Length: 247
Image (cartoon, rainbow, N blue to C red; front, side, top):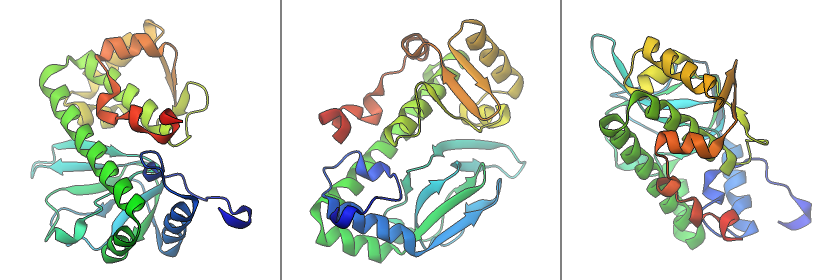
């Protein structure tokens, strides 16, 4: 970066590709152009809506979800600070699922054609977008496998592990503590369990001194053991391919 210019935003895009300083500044400037605040529990993009923007999560937590007419809801993935989602949204006619805010959020809205033009002109940015999508698809696959294969205890442990590693990637995990503003009802919707069952599993992990979860903060007390409980391997997050890991 020239002139001592510091990046304002931490994006997962920066982690998986050797972006030059000029590329990072281009992305940073793009995120400054149009931003939107979303209240907790409101939609960013509703099911059936025609999507208009690519979104970057600057602050707050969101989710993809599907909801049935009777109100039952399944979270499909979490959207965390630093995430970019729907980088090729211009090919979608209408949304087949909802994207909602779990907490208060700030997102950057980018016109898809503008991002596509940037990728066309900068190979490293195109590669970063490809990696972003690849990791997102891998995370979806792991959640499907978790619902089909893991026990309730393993599902909860996996979610804690995944969030920790994803937030650490964008510099939001001092020591072994990270933000965790989800409710037990949110965890239930993410893991296909009831809130009562989630509470029981969380209490087990607390008694075993694997985690502390109070308010909006999660501390991993024994990361190796928690990963073992979850049968968690970070292969689907491709952490070995990050710039930090390579350096």
